Length: 318
Image 1 (spheres, rainbow, N blue to C red):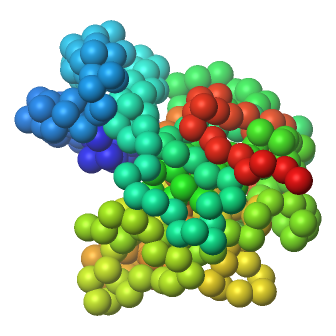
Image 2 (cartoon, rainbow, N blue to C red; image 1 turned 180 degrees about the horizontal axis):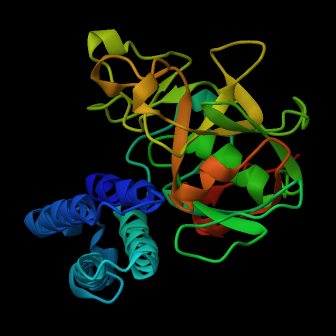
């Protein structure tokens, strides 16, 4: 599903080319995604728990043949209609995100004893951000009308980063990010750090290495030695916790950022120079094209947990 998502999300950038749109490249991207979906049908469906498989089969059919699916998107591209392509792409990515949510509903490992009273997310969830321009200007989505509020959706992966995702989801539920200003650099969009150390849990650095069955804590990965994370940083729109200012063995209790990966500034193999050094816990699945329009001073008007509340475990108070 991640390979399908990556292939489709490249189209978001192609749509932003102001002159002649590269519809041939877009067509190739969709055909690649469709081939993966068809060839890997059994793997996609078998990865879901039995109780979700019926719903997954319906969503899979929608992805390949439905109105919100790949064949419809392919036709829009062949018609060379950028507005329809933009809408079709958003619909298809939404179907992909729904399928991803069915694939990992619970944890397959036990948390270390010392972290059992931390908030945790046992599966995946969706957080929706409403971002407003701080200077009164407008967002200009590809193929859409300018608007003063942009909606981003993030799939938060508690399966691979249960403590980091759980702490973040708890802060979202508490409204900690509502009204927060954003700060931008060339590589990241950061939430303000003014919440302080007393808001949120001081979660240890949490990284699930590829090929392993549980996360590592308080340790980074050595990419040079072939260690790679299940949730890579080297993805445009990755959602990541900043480091704790007091110790890089811990993440910040509340400051997160959207990573603006650019392969032109990457190292060997196309990986970020910071790959394996941060707790990545999710990815932007809707509104990714808007990230490039966010500027310092723009505001998170609201952040809401729109799916996955039932997977959020909160420690008992007192």
